Image (cartoon, rainbow over all chains, first blue to last red; front, side):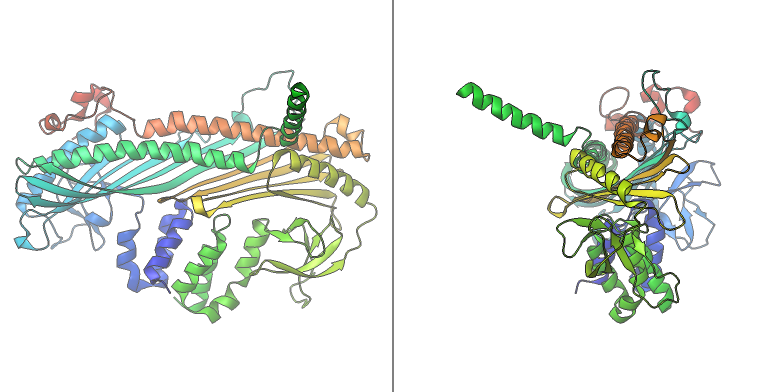
Length: 290
Length: 297
């Protein structure tokens, strides 16, 4: 039999992405022993928090959590405050501040809103030199201001590891994008039908369409290194590249693949008519050949 | 978690199974709960609920057609205390059968005496519905049921499944209509579920409920067979309209919501110059966007 954790991950790949948080909580309840591994392996929607010191928004995820508190990348403070919360070394913090500024620019350029945060952590083995790791998270939400307006959310989680090799660095990047789109439609939203089109009396409709999910990709690349700030440039380029790729992929799957499957289930065209037409055509071709 | 809570959790998972993947979900649950005895006993109600809700397709014994497990096709037992085995009806073959909710097999087929008053119109609806099915579904199943006792509603159900595990996708279309000759109304719902899971987990879930009055040209034809084909023509038109509107929703989501969440490229139509980015503090200066939209920093 497979490991319990494998079954949990397989299950999470099948259950509706709209209910990820609820289902992860249930799994943690069933197998508390697997909780840590599960929480590390299943990406969950990012939570927006407000830094108490600066008033700026940041993102809360498993990577800036210590107990029940989350560290802000802006003030480096934990909320709710804790005394001995883990913080990066001063050297790492300096790079973290720079990275947060850079990705804030990236966020504004691509998302034109939303929230971004970068968290770095020192190498586990102090003798490991500057082989640090980190995470870049981005989130944008569109909330409807009226009941029938479309809504949606985009969550990006990029976890990376660095290995320095002289004037080069090797990067391993795991990127997950969670995307949710919801549209509601009701009788009052439908445009008036032309008078020649007959609509039955008392015609009413109410519907909702939800497209939700996540995709994960891994990339590994080598980049040249001038100083520690080069890491930000290198990781920035990699993340920009993979987000562009994943956006295309999501577009293809969300609006192409799932739509094709719907048309596979039900055909708008009359299949019988098409069949008859084909037969007729065959007959004609046969007739002409004779 | 105690045993009851674990069964409850397992049942909740099961009810969320995507089309055609209930056995995969069940396998995962078995390994996670790791108590087959507890599971076997406790999971039955959830399996039954899933099959009824999801219009599970069943091979009817002694026939060469498929039927649908649903609440409308369920026959007794009248009360919960009644020990009699629950049975389902296949109106097309006029058979009732027992159904195993785990193996999905039907057994013990027995003749069923249809209501004489309703049967002719039901049959007319069924004939029209089968023609409709052929015209728009390649893997569809349809069932038409007479009004249950005390009701005046004929029920038309459609289900179409496509499972393609080798290419990591599956899909299900369900629709159900009640045709009420007394209140002269049709009410219906259409539900679509799609799961695409190649290196990810993407799901489409749609619900759509509709209702309308039966128009005079249909009412005047009742109870002739032409009324039945006219009703199916109305249903065909509703489903067509829905599919077209779904297409519009797709376009809207792609053009408004998706683009509004993340641009394909910045306004500059160029990728970022990261060396420059490190020198700038505010993205807005690069993007040239309105300063009033800037986050206060």
